Image (cartoon, rainbow, N blue to C red; front, top):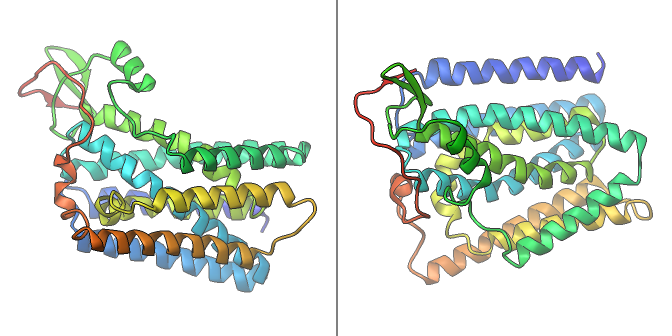
Length: 332
C-alpha cells in the first residue's frame, strides 16, 4: 500500500479512537483525575511505540528512528502548550470537568490544521528545495525569541481572535458545559466556546514552530503526519497530568529554545552535513532531560512544585473576560 492509503487508514483509526474517547469513556463531564490521565497517557504512548516499532521492522531502522525523533520533537515542543492551556482555562474560569471537552474539539482542530500545514510544506519542499533553509532561519529566530522570553501567555483582553469573536458573536456567561446556549430565542456563545477559540488560535501559532521542525527530521509525508498526530492526540491526557507541574519547570523554555535552535541549525547545514536520525533523537531527548532535571532541582530548593492539578481552575492568572450574566439558559 502507498503512503496515501496508510495515511487514510491512520486517520480512520484516529477518528475511531476520538469517537470512543468522547462517546464512550467521557460521555459524562467529570474532572479528570491524575490516575485517569496517567492511564490514557500510557495508552497513547503505547500505541505510538507500537506504530514506531512496526515502522522500524517494516520500513527499516532509519524510518523507525525518524518516526521516534519526530514524535519526541513534537511532544517536547507541545510541553510549551500545556502551560498556555492552563492559562486559558484559568483566565476564563473554565470548570475542570468541562476542560476535557474543550481539549477534545481543540485536538480535532489541531489535527486538521497540522494536516493542512504538512500538505502545504510537503508541496513547497517538493517544488522549492531552498524553503528548507527558510524554515531553518524561522526556527532559529523562534528559538532565540523563546530564549529571550519574548513570548507571552495569551490574555483574553488583548487576544485579537477573541476580541473579533466577541464583536461578531453575542456572548453570555454560562458554565453549563455547552459551547452555545439559547435564551429568549437567541443563540449565545459561552466562555467554553471562547476557550476553544483561544486553544485553536494558540495551537496554530505553536504549529508554525513544530511543523517546520518535523521537516528537519524527514520529508516523508507518512512519518511527518503520523508522528505529529500521535504526539498531539496524547497531549490532552498529558495536560491533565503535567499542566500544573510545567508551570514550575523554570528551565523548560530554555530547553525548548535550545531544541528549536538545534533543529533550525540542522536544517541550515543539512545541505553540507547529514545528521543521522539517531543522533537527532539523542540530542532532543538529552536537552529535554537536562532542562527537566535542572528545573526539578531548582524547584526542590524552593520547597517543591505547585499544588495538585485540582487548583488549575483557580490559579491567579490573567484577568478573564466580562460577559453579560445569564441564568437557566438551555444548552445547545
